[in-house]
Each structure stands twice: as structure tokens, then as C-alpha cells.
View 1 (cartoon, each protein chain N blue to C red):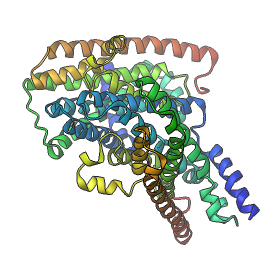
View 2: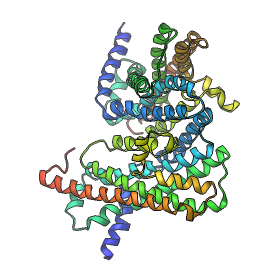
View 3: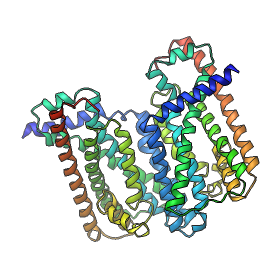
Amino acid sequence: MSNSLRVFFIGGLTSYRALFNWLSPWILIPSFFVAPLFQILLFAYIGRQTGLEDDRFYVIGNAIQYSAIPCLFAMANTIADERFTQTLGFILVSPAKRLPLFVGRALPVILSGVLVAAFGLTVGSLLLHVHLPASAIAPLALVVGVSAASCTGLGLANAALGLRVRETAVSSNIIFGFLLIFCGVNVPLQKLPAWMSTAAQGLPLTHGIEAARRLAEGQGLGRVGGLIAAEALVGAIWGFLGYTSLRLMEVQSRRHATLERA
Amino acid sequence: MRTVRLLALGWAFNLKMLSQSAFDGFLGVLWPLFFATIAFFMYRAGRNDASLLYASLGASVMGVWSSTSVAASSAVQRQRRVGTLELVVAAPAHFSLVMLPVTVAMSTIGIYSMAATLFWGRFLFHIHIHIVHPLIFCVAIPAIVLSIGMLGFLLSVTVVRYRTAWALGNMLEYRIWLVCGFLVPVSLFPGWARPFSWVLAPTWGVNAIRGAALGTGSPLRDVAVCIALGLVYAALGVLLTETVLRSARRTASLALT
């Protein structure tokens, strides 16, 4: 048990630090802190031009959605890049349990997602003079945490894909784009075509963003409990799918001797 | 004549190479489509449905910049990584004549994205594009592609000492979309922000494209300013290249950054 905990916490953190090559401040600051602000500004200005929603709608939507950048890219890097560093074989022949081995890498990723969303919410609100009630701060932190964890579940599935395809940057960008369109980040779900808003129910961030918007409107945590639970459930399902896919890819790569091929 | 041949061949070879890359080719087309789709939904759902054509024309240019910003900012790093930088610098042709077609090829790849965005708008959002001045429209497209390529060239030599320059290019992507008024009019920004738009060639390029299609403004003047600014970027890039290369030779740091 203690060995699994060590693999989960220490192994996870070590893998994150070793394989997520965005941790240099020269990449981290532009990618995690500057880019989300411009995404918020871009859509807030389109929103002003179209008169669709107010600035608060775009600040909350885009700040939380941008947590997908670490959740998708970092998760893919910390697993799929084992192959590029030629350490995947060593990892997979080790006797370590697979659940702490893979899922442990998700913990620092979730924290990064929370950091990005919190920064976007805070600075985006200051830039656009959006008021968030003080009573909503703690519940918003919970929603941001659940949303980042949920999106990391999808990131785990993306990482599994990285054991089969070469360009995880492409798949991460594509998933990010789909989340941006489908999850009601910039267009209210009821204004999207019905099939899109239905599909959004099965995607991470959709319920989290909705919960955060309601909290910012002054609703209590009890009123959005269902949305937070739905977000957690969606994340758990994606996490399970991701973990299962990782195991499947591992078995397949052993069977076909394709571990180092992409 | 040899210079023209070098530029043309460099452009053609780099265009072929970029077309083979999933990141630069496929994603280059798809990525701006995500943003264009959201913009179309927002304009259609908002109070300003008539502006869909305005948004469609601006969104089509987003891909030209997207395909240039990240790739151009890391263009010199890429040469360094694949081990061709010393060879290119030591070649009798000026370094700028090798790098300029590289970045122009990157912006040319954006034409795929431009066409894809216009078709996407036409078939999924029923945005009919009626072009009032087709000839000027046809001139405005290569003008903006060329000037964005030259802006990419200036960017590539400006950030040559920045090892992770791709992150800077990535950061500039939304900024240019926003500041150059691709999706919202520049007049919406605070007064202090507008001069930034005026010195950026894409602002004039997208104005020219809109003006030619909608029959508004002075598209020919906009094309001229767009090209002139592109030439200024190229001249600044050449001057900067001289300084950077001289410094790299003096400190023997060409391969070290």
C-alpha cells in the first residue's frame, strides 16, 4: 500500500516535472497566464459586438475552459512522452501497480489546471471590471477543482491515444477546440444546435462552467450541487475510459511489439 | 534573377514540407475553424445577424496568421535543431533570402484555412459572399499573405535568442486576431490600443478584403498600406539579421542558444 502511495505521489510529481517540458517560465508564463487572458478578451469583445452575453459570461467560461490546456497537454506529455525519452519500456516492465502509476501523474496536472483557471478568473475579472461576490469565491474554487479534475479524466484518454499516435499536440489541440465549441463556453447551450448541446452533457467542463456562472449570479452551493456532481461523474467516466484505454494500449503494444513505434 | 530564383524555390520547397506536417497542415486548417465556428454562432445568436459576412471575412484571415505565428517564431530554432543553421548562415546567399521564403511559405499554407473557413461559413452557416470588387479582392489576398509572411520573418529574427520562441508565437496568436480587428471592429477598443492596430499590416489587409467584398472604405489604399508595412517588416528583419549574425559570429554562439 505504502509503495503504491509512493508511486502515486512521488512518482506522479517526478514524472510531471521530468516530462512536462512547459515548466520553464519562458513557456509557462505565455502559455498559462498570458494566452488565456487574450482568449477571454477576444470573446468578451465579440460578445460586446454581438450583444449576446455580458463580460462575466465570457470571463467565467473561458477561464475555466482554459484549464483544459494543462489538463490535456500536460497529461498527454507525462505519459506519452515516456516513449520519446525511451523510458516507456522500463515503466511497463516495472512491477508497479498501473493505477497509481498512471493516475498519480494526474494530480499535479489537476493543480496546474486549477491555477490556470483561478488566474484567468481573477485577472480577467479585474481587466473587464467583472464583479464576483465574495460569498462565491470558495464555492467557485470547488467548482474549478472539480472541473479541472474532470477535464484531466479526458486528458487521460488523450494520453492513451498518445501511446498509439505520434502527434499528441495535434490531438490535444483538437480536443481543446471541441471543448471550446461544445461546452457552452462562449455560446449558451440553448443557442447551439440541439445535438451539440446534447453532446455537451457528456463532456467535461460543461456542467462546471454552468455551475460557476450560477454561483457568480449569487446562487448558493446547494443550488448547484447537482451540476457539480454531474461534472464529477462525467470526469470519472472519462478517467475510467482513459485508464482502460491505457491498459488496452499497453496490452496491444506488448502483443504486437509496437511499444516504440508510432 | 538568382535572388528571385532562390526566393521562389525556397518558397516552393518549404510549402511542400509544411504540407506534409500534421501540425502545420491539418491543424493549421482546423484550428482557426474552431474559432470561426464560435464567432459564427455568436454573431448568429446575437443581435447582429447581418454582420455574419463581416465575421466570415475576418475569420478567414485568422488561419493565415495562425499558420505563421507559432511556426515563424520557432523557424530559426528549427534550423538549429535539425543542424542546418550553420550551413544556411555560411552559404553565399544572404541569410534573409533563405528565411524570408520559409515564413512566406508558412503564411501561404494559411490560404487552405482561408478557403476552408469561407466554405465552412457558406455551407454550414449559409453565409453568402458576394464580392463587389473581385479584382481588388484577388489582389488583397496575396497582399495579406505576403505581409503576414514578412511579419513572421521579422518575428523569427526578433526572437532568435529566445529558446522557446514557439510559446511566444502561441501567445501572439489571439493578440493579433484581437488587435487587428479580425472579428471585431478596431473602433471597439480603447483609444490607446488603436495605434497598435495601425502599425500591423494584417489590420489593413483584413480591411482591404472586407472593403473589396462589401464595397466599403478604400480597399486599394488598404492594400497599398498593407504591402508597404510588409516591406518595412522585411527591411527591419534584414537589418536585425545582420546584427544577430554579427553577434553570433563574434561570440561563437550560433548553435548554443
